[in-house]
Each structure stands twice: as C-alpha cells, then as structure tokens.
Length: 198
Image 1 (cartoon, rainbow, N blue to C red):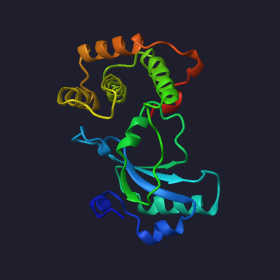
Image 2 (image 1 turned 60 degrees about the vertical axis):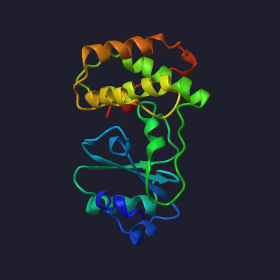
Image 3 (image 1 turned 135 degrees about the horizontal axis):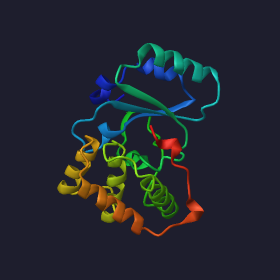
Image 4 (image 1 turned 30 degrees about the vertical axis):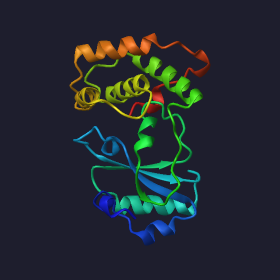
C-alpha cells in the first residue's frame, strides 16, 4: 500500500484482502489526483472491481464503507470504466493505493475520442451556468485535445483552476463553447449526459 496516500485512505491491507478476488485494485482519482489542481475539495477513491452485482464481497464492502469511509471522501465502485466521458481523462492520473491492475481509459484512442467529443458537444449544448464546477472537466479536455497529450500549460492550468473554483469567466465560457461546437458532430456516438451530472 502506498504510504504517501494512507492519510486519505482508512482500510488496512487485511481488510482489502478480504475483498479479493472481487477487488482488483484501489486508486485515488478526482481533482486530487490532477497535477494542476492545488486545492481539491474532497478525496475520490476508486475501487476497481470485477463486477458490481450483489455478492458477499459487495455486502462486505458496504459494511466497511459505512464504518471506515472518512468524511469528505467519495468511494466509487468501478468495473471496466463505462460512460465516463465527462471525467474519464482523470484515469490517466490515477494514484495507486493498493493492487497493480489499472482501469484503462484513453481519450486519445480514436473511438473514445469521438465518443468523448460528441458527449461534450451535447453537454455544452445544455448551457449550464458558468458557476457549475463541472466546467473544469470540459475545459480540461478541450485543452488536452488541443495539446494532443495529457498535459496543460501553466496558463491552461490556471484557467482550469478558475473553473474548478466556480469562477469561470465569460471569456473562458465563450472559448469552450466555440472550441467544442467547432468539433464535427458524430451522431453515431450521441450519448445522454444525465448520467454524469453529479
């Protein structure tokens, strides 16, 4: 277990071993795993598992979560990542806590890129208020696609932090809308956005 992350995680090696082989690995994700976010508001932990059906391991996980999950921490049960088009890019920056097998999600894989861009086009079309924290996910991916890799410049990182802190400027909003609406539409990958509102 990664000792540098133990303060963000409250289960012991023995408790995690109880959940195997259902539990594959454990990772820190969310804004706290992103190198350009300096003031994460909470801690997101992904439990990468084989399935999320009812089973003794799932029941045991729920018991452990009820007893040990710290306040301000979100524990997420994740099978093969599915429909994470708003924030799936974060999987590139996962910080390992336990286990070794990493969930795979690459926004630059051609089909995934097409699906992600189509999702973001639909999401931007909803015209949510600039105060929504979720804009930082959209702006981040606009920059990543423009850069062609998983990095941001200092200026881009500063702009993403503004959105993360719910301080998106009108100029940034206009930039995102212009960039995303310029992407070609691909109705083959049209997706509902309602699953990723939280």
